[in-house]
Image (cartoon, rainbow, N blue to C red):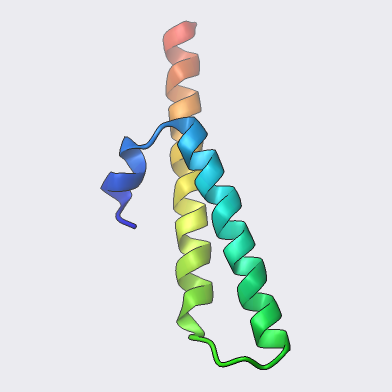
Length: 69
């Protein structure tokens, strides 16, 4: 997912997507534990996307707080 696409999403959508990606990360870990064939790069991609989404959420909340003050 591109950063531009992430920035266009609402805070609620971003929070839902973060939860979804955390579940995906958990599933990847479980698949690795039972030695299923997985793409190791998926771990990094998923973690990176989660971090980007959390950063955008934080930016939007900070911007909203400044506008309200």
